[in-house]
Image (cartoon, rainbow, N blue to C red; front, top):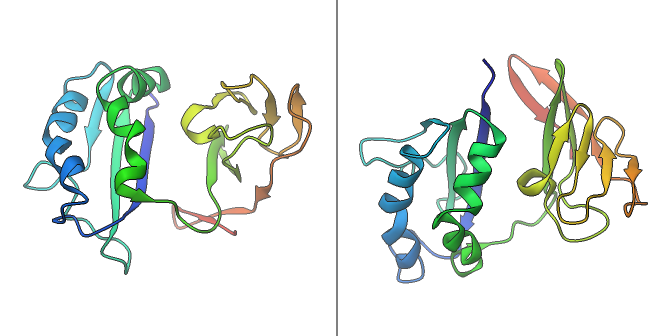
Length: 179
């Protein structure tokens, strides 16, 4: 059985123990418990505290990382957008900065992995958060336009501008993207 791995990487506007982050921190246990009890939830990265806030995989202490596994995309979508988790998603700009650089969506098609720009060229929709992958076609669920993820080419209106694609290599089971 295949599962869906979900990763979030974010840069906090201030240290985790600051007043700026208090609203986010106050809801962590509630949201993690909700995930744990959600249909299709398989696993999430957590330490002794019950969350992944201890993990700092980057040189910047304000970058946090979260990783979970779900049975299906629909299960993850239900949790993210149709529970109280959506409240935190709506408020994320209160706590997190937008990263400089490329926002990339990854896709597995058969045994290959492809990377494209994350934002639909027709509008400001995230393909990694909202897109639906069928075969090698990702559909923007905001505008219903489609792209071939292997080439970035638009395959359905209203999308006419191709997605930027990025070379992907798998080296020792590590996915490497050249941006």
